[in-house]
Length: 354
Image (cartoon, one colour):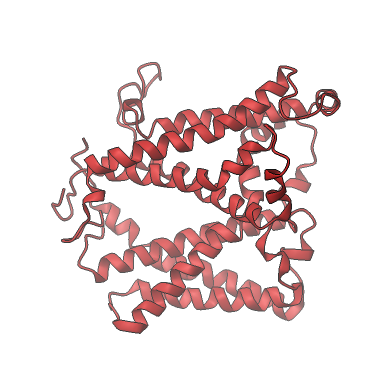
């Protein structure tokens, strides 16, 4: 059990509101420039690679930039409100929090879509293989302005959520560093978090393992869920190795997810040189898990809006089964990361609670 939480954590969290305000205002002004020039909008019909699996596909391109400009600039105002300590009351407080959380969810989950998750999955393979010219892809077609805009939206949503969280703590007599207040729920206690966090972690670990099993079967020459002709084509073109790379990444992710509820997730294993026995920083586990949880949730939300996704239930196969589980994967992983944080935050040096 951890017994220390550094007071500087509160000061770092206090930077979230001004950073969110600056980030949203900057992108809002960029969207305003796009409104005036008619250029730069990277979604919908302007994005040939992500139109089908993005909820913004139904937004006309001319309407996109002014809508984004209004949403982002108003979000910057909300972040500025969160920079202060004014609690606000009644409908005004509800309006600020309602708009702020809705915009944060829109930016962090709706805008990124499947593309961000795909790049997270391929990133290790692309980075390790780049010096050797493998896989043979044109990186300029992968790392595009549209992908960068999706990543920027994710960052903006996370910053705004952090700003709102800080404001809520400031105005609800809660500790800015740890978030504890006088009326904390029992579900946040370490023992309770350990119980529900275990279920969440195992659920979040099993889903990517189902996905990995199909890709490893194809690598072994087993046409699990696909035709033999298609498998032969994949082996001939080398796509089977790309699938195996994704399967390996999913397997590693599943193992790391279980670390959220295992002792080696709190102390580095003995076989790690220089780190053996050392305490695992909470952020080292929570931040990557939270990022993947947001990306998976965004990808699942985009897929749920596609008619093609629902047709998977009509012609069920082992190749497509993992996609049907994605809507559970993101929330389960996010819950497991939250439980890990609640278990390990320990006593707070700033407020003395815990």
